[in-house]
Length: 251
Image (cartoon, rainbow, N blue to C red; front, side, top):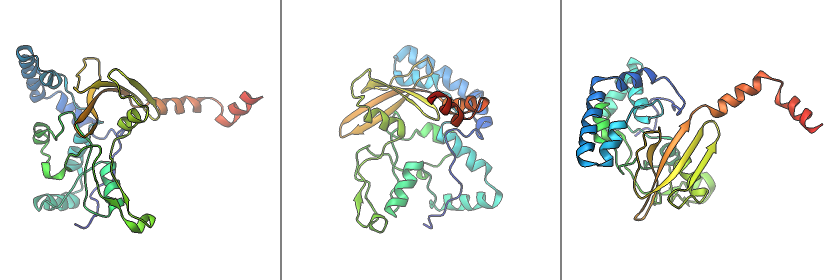
């Protein structure tokens, strides 16, 4: 109700949850889940069970970073969060939901899709994350309200909300099954349009929802390297400054 934050943003490159990730991936429970899903996939050939049999946590998963936050707040803040959770007066979201909240000056919190079009009750239960903390899942194209008139002088409707790699796929017009785009920035992201069905790969790619507009659902398979841009910057610093090399190149 106050709009005050309990914790700062944690970026997708943050590694503070790495020990928690390792602990979960090596746990007996995860091994049991993998084994059970492999057996179920053998008999049913369901891709859902195949995906679950290959699933592992990474530090890029928001769920693990949220679990880490809930475990590592200071005692004072932990008590505040505990009380807010008991009163169902606490919200969690990603950068898009936070920006939407600030722009609309309202309690409108939405998010983009996971592969099952809803939050996983299994994962949230395992990590002790109350479902009411999470924003409701909506279409990519949806009436999310309007930007408050005080910000730009006029109310501007917000009718789409989409993550960066999905928006890059859409912007590059990768609308057909098999279309591929490669984005190189801080990290490198390779995305493949897999049509209407999520595909699980043994090669490190993971399924995502690209976008949902009306009844159309477009799925992606994504693989990434987190530190491409960082590595290039590090390599640049080993030699002469970029100003010097630019001058040398021009002459």
